[in-house]
Length: 247
Image (tube, rainbow, N blue to C red):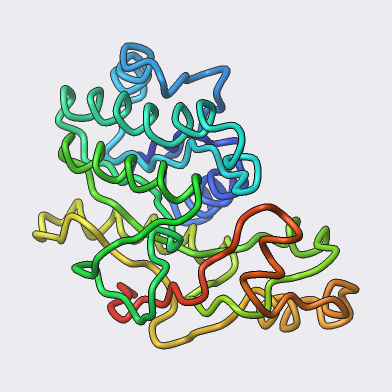
């Protein structure tokens, strides 16, 4: 499989590229300087030159805290990239998936793909708009929840209340590539997928403790949305669990 990964220099994009190379796939994972995903002509040019079978759209504005004040940048990173990438893929008849977030949910879970979304942070609102742009352009949406080792080792404190199907970034990368493999078999798949470990609900704190049991951040647990908002200016949702994860 030939895989094109937008946002290929980011934490998730790099892991997807590594997984592809280790498993016999041909991959091109350009950064912004090599493929500006807010420019449909540039995306289409890369598609034409590389000839992928599948595109994974990882290019995004991922700083949840900064999105609260940098709303234009968040819109460009999460909405315009989906619209322009989607237009290029639709023109090329290329299967593609937009990587979204569990943060589109905020009410009591678990949530299925048909559950009502209710994004409360600016980041989540732009990701939801990106989802809609994806669906308009014949793409698939994959909602995920992950953390990276880099994040975990830099945490000064950690969220200990949001329940989700959160996993490590390497696991999410593997799921996205396997998702592409299934799509290319010709199997009819839903337009929106939830990717993650089924029926395994953890907080960030629980994940960090598994991999970095002596991390100093575990000595400073944030246990309420109110405390989370006091520290960073937004409240992470309490329950983003998926009830219908694709394995």
